[in-house]
Length: 139
Image (cartoon, rainbow, N blue to C red; front, side, top):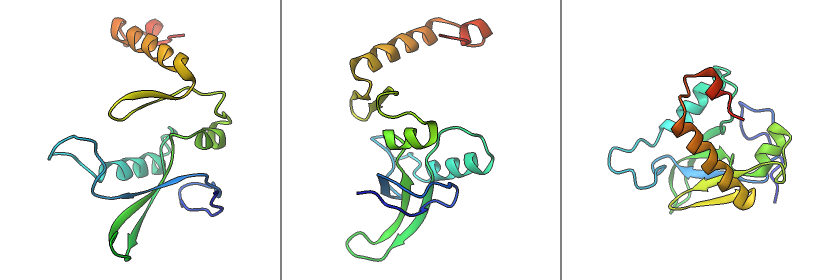
């Protein structure tokens, strides 16, 4: 189901296939007691406000008064989806490679070739000086 509403005040987009509602205090995967949970929305807001022009998700804070989920939440734009890349970059699921890592690594888009290309890029970065403009111009 698609939501047709301008959810995020930092974007002109008014239609979403998916969004995320996430508790403001549970943002990390096994990073221990020193984990920071409010960093993501803050950094993304700075990036958008400063017009850094990188892919980042938008968010809006909200308070949920309904038990048992009472609390402060973030409504977040889902960036790891072809709906996001199609809207902002004009690239649908057949034009992208996307690898996800969360307890394991898999190709969300691009199949096995996505992981092969990622391994090649990572190897190149690890074996070349990225301070060298010629090496940095990979590809």
